[in-house]
Image (cartoon, rainbow, N blue to C red; front, side, top):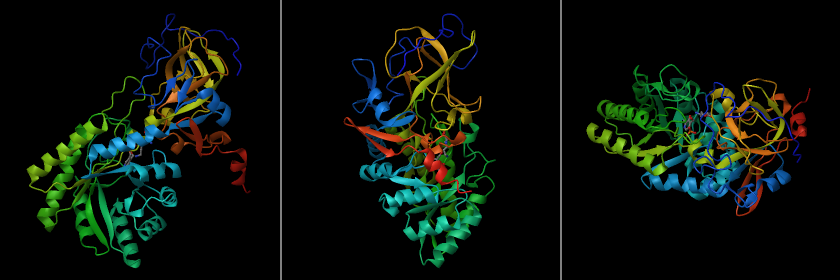
Length: 463
Ligand SMILES: Cc1ncc(COP(=O)(O)O)c(C=O)c1O
Ligand SMILES: N[C@@H](CCCC[NH3+])C(=O)O
């Protein structure tokens, strides 16, 4: 790696242009444990390590950009969620956050169930040996083939999303001679305090049957009238990257209201309720997420209270965390390329990846942290924007962050909390092969999703 000098960019002390950023931290080399995976440290030389392996050696062996996932941290988070909810509830990991066969094996071993939302996720789960009864199938537009494969495989739960889907699933289950357990996804009308694109329970969007218009109650009536479907409960998912439980409180109140209405109208007490996922993580030191145990306690209290006031037996609760399990377990390692100081503004720090490995900043204005990983530095803080190599000015990985002013091409940068919705939403924009995911544990690193190659890309181009 080269260490060539470059003109220093604008520094904190010189100028602070407008932007959404906190003042520079007292120590640029410090690692906030809320933002970094459990085993991440600096070694004696100041080099970042994960699972006992340092990033210089990891970059040498696996290249950059690459996602490095702390396997012990992933497993510990699975256990924390499972133990927090205990025997009386089920935790379904939301595979959309990040799914691979290794992940499925870890989930199976650590006692979590799995939420999948496409045929591809279902195939991955089944091929890695997740028992079908521990799988729930989601989606607002499941194809006939996806429903067939799920019912044939014997998935434990299908979450139905529309009147047409109720009819389609019933028809397929009947044809296959099955009685398929299903939940009904309802929209409870909650405005979750999160980005518009990741809020899912307000009325004007595509998911679920609205409670307000009586569509949810009509859905219940229809499913109860179908022999090939067994209605086990009601599902609500209010959005993602949420920090307070007040939205869940409103959701639980309204879902329990539907259970009471179902009992009153049909004489049926549905045995399950699912409050979805959506619990937030710390992307920067400004975020302060709750622990799974506090969330579990709070959700259980809410459901108990609502059921007591409706005179219902407490149903079995399930939740579907994705981000909160995998998000903090991985960081992306990049190599610094060009540095471009813009006087009075900031220094643009280009890295060897970008929006193809992390679309979240461009899509949701997401905030990330970043640290110089290949060494420490005592240089003053330099206001920086970490950008990718793609042909878009919105190709930003970290909008505003302070990096040491002696940053140079060849340095390695690590962006923490990229375990969720980064590799799973990665693209080949500009024909960039997608980076690998490498699991690190006890001093050993192994590829769980290999790096794409140009040959992989060309193989699909058959014209
Ligand atoms: C139905 C459902 N369950 C669970 C999740 C997981 O959400 P998160 O990763 O925010 O926990 C999602 C995505 O938001 C979802 O749509
Ligand atoms: N993909 C989104 C979350 C939405 C999850 C799917 N319901 C994110 O990166 O934050």
